[in-house]
Image 1 (tube, rainbow, N blue to C red):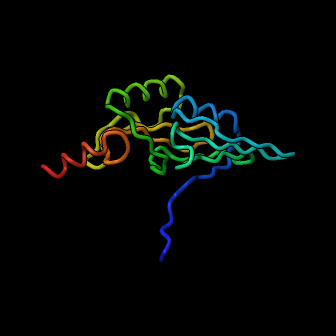
Image 2 (image 1 turned 30 degrees about the vertical axis):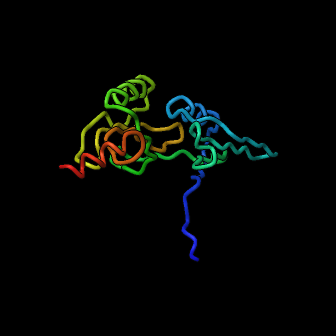
Length: 146
């Protein structure tokens, strides 16, 4: 029987692991679920609540900052429960000086989203209206009835 791979984690080398941990905790609601230190290496596993065995970010010190242009759309995507939630997090990011993409609407399946830069330069998107994450079943149902 063939084995179907399943994504479990993304590993990132970052220049300031403490700043990245704080970012993903404060903006993404993730928590450190494992941390280890050696003479030259710190590794932290971060997960969303109740997803600790499903999908994690592995953060490792020793990386270099990224310098992505604003029109580079590689990113990590997080779903939110409403357009208002996207607006609120965009406002927080703007005040923190890390907003890259102001809230905007795009045709299905993209939806309403904004983007920010984490302390290492990775882009992070927060969206509402995609057929992924919170409310995905509602959007799938709407697409079938249109």
